[in-house]
View: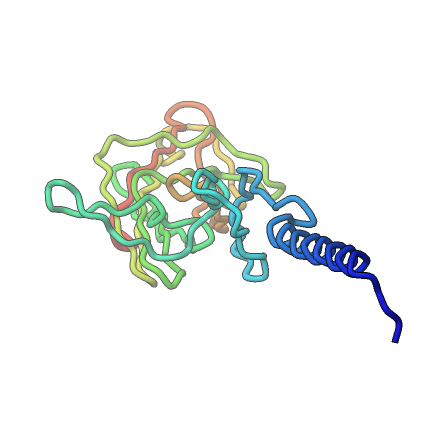
Length: 233
């Protein structure tokens, strides 16, 4: 057995204690120091796309981060709940409006009278939801190559009302003009009538079978009325 002096043993014990203390201190620091800086939110959010495969928002987002919003002007096809007004009634949200893609257009039979030609312009709800139309349609006669014939139709005076269309229901607006044989206006035979639903930009194309229409000269104006429920007066 090798004899170790007491002073040497004390030195060894002291060195070992320092080593253990150093190890414990390193472990404590390791629990509070990250190996990389924490991820932070940039404070911006991309528009919602509805893509279910998109990753969920980061848990690091703060309450001040803006809420993602749907793209501006994107059409809504889902039914919208009516909201109560202060007077106890209800107001439908703007998204209840019928969009062009949800409608079918047609032109009814002429109902002439007193030197006037009168055609009902009909919009039918082909979607699976209830939607509304209100006001005047847009309309333009065009030739086979798509060129417009005559000026844009005018608007007859009348009060607009909101027409609610359940799936399959229709609304009509009148398209009228003086009989060219009576007025002496210059005429053309359109290939189609372009119809734009109220507050929409896209149009629907209907083959025109109503014969000659006035495009210039005396009493050449064509007029439109507001939408009413149904398919004809």
